[in-house]
Image (cartoon, rainbow, N blue to C red; front, side, top):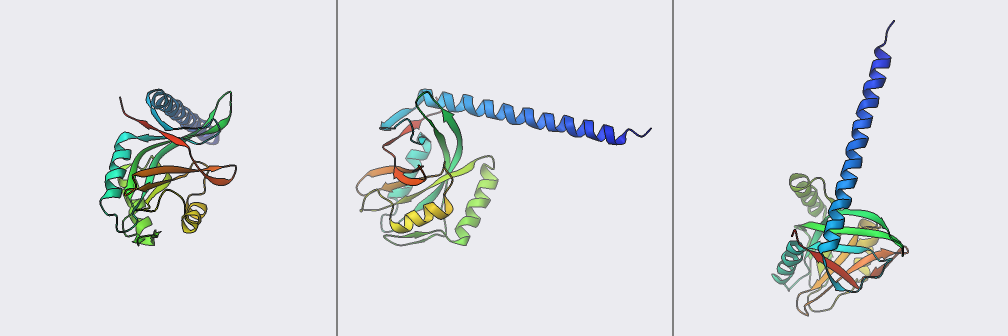
Length: 203
């Protein structure tokens, strides 16, 4: 009798099991990582139970502050990298987002009040992500408002709705002149400002 089909099925089944176990291990590892970060993070502002809970690595926070202040004659931007998980608590279901890296939005067209990601910008971002950290997701974007506050303009809302429209994707705005900053989240299918966020370290 020819058992090749049976053997192939068993082999495929074993591979499928291995992949499933690896995926489950990755999920467990990610949850352990997120729980560790959550326990050691410092809160800036106020976060509601049903808000997106954003955890930004201190290195990213400080690097983006420096990047924003280097040129205040025009808007500057970056892609935020990291991971996310859906969380369930006694109070609410929600999302945790960990921002552990970023990529400068090079080749963007910028003025004092606008920022446009070009095709060349996206090519650069995808190349950098693949080379540096292919396991990380684009969890949002950052841009500056030099001298005119933390909000999302009509064009910013267009970018958020068309390019960063997944529930875990956030927008981070820095005004390097007024020294203010803030996140915007998807909440109840609308874009709303977050009252706060967390800063964490590796320690």
